[in-house]
Image (cartoon, rainbow, N blue to C red; front, side):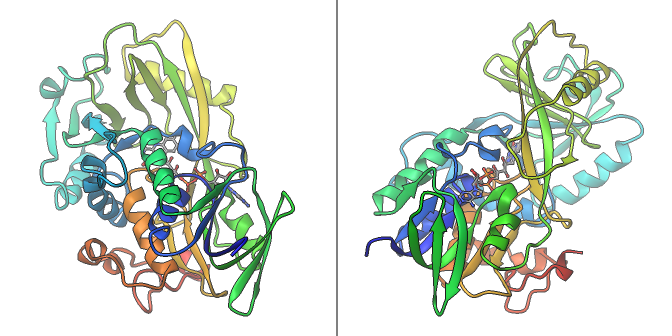
Length: 385
Ligand SMILES: Cc1cc2nc3c(=O)[nH]c(=O)nc-3n(C[C@H](O)[C@H](O)[C@H](O)COP(=O)(O)OP(=O)(O)OC[C@H]3O[C@@H](n4cnc5c(N)ncnc54)[C@H](O)[C@@H]3O)c2cc1C
């Protein structure tokens, strides 16, 4: 049984951890991470909010279905709270008001409590925004995620069920021989596995090529975050964004995270916040709020990973047996992680789709994919154009 596993999950971010946590209950699992610590890349750099009104229909459905896990985590997974109340306010100016109303019409089908507020109604919760913002869509039920606690809970569950987690273990090549994979690691180890799950984030296409299958058009888009001292208490403020995605602000233990919502296409890398990104952030902060911080407390950048249709790649590769994609989770990978993990685990184990996912009818929600047997089983580059 040495170095032979039913499932090898590549990537120790939230996608890999959630999928491996599900698979550990049904077979032998090895989770591989190239870095010396888990969640070092995108997972460790998020804004840590869950908004059911965010993203396309598929994302919104996965987010809604994941809520129960965060609010009432299974007691065998963790006793720690995984989320806390926050609320989210998406602002519009005169020019973007029609867009806000349209978005409200769409999202209220799934989140009926989302409401449009006028300036008088939202000023109390966001007193520092500039007077160009005339309306806001308020999602009271949006909540903060404790990403560390969530990721830790998944990893604890993997180990509890006998799964193995290895860091500093980069997959450099995998070859499908008959019904199993022969996997070579950077540390010289050789692994055998029935199924590989590609949760390699920005490197998902690189991994596909190393496994001798086709890349699917992964686009890592860099986003900058700057942390400022707002010089007054913002703890009770909601997450604040704008409908045309110009800026977001989020309270963060007495400070304020600010991002210009930039999306710069880059090679997969250890993203670093550059001077241009920071300058754009401060410029947007000035034009959108009354805040004039004296000092930047922290800064970072992370890669939000998409394919052109902005839906995640969840499902079996159509070119090679035993290769499951769990990638392109965009700006939603934490808030959808519980359901993404369940779904990818069901593909990997070739078991039936979990009931809570059947109920939300994912097949209908992914019209741009060529779905033959339902639920994204057939994925090709053409489908993504
Ligand atoms: C600024 C910012 C704000 C965000 N805000 C939110 C938010 O509020 N809410 C939300 O839900 N989401 C948010 N996101 C998105 C979320 O963080 C991502 O969707 C999620 O973290 C993606 O997780 P992942 O596991 O796919 O990728 P990653 O966390 O990047 O994990 C992939 C891992 O694979 C490893 N790897 C790659 N190749 C190999 C190999 N060959 N062998 C071994 N290991 C390998 C990498 O080292 C990496 O650790 C945000 C992202 C950013 C950047």
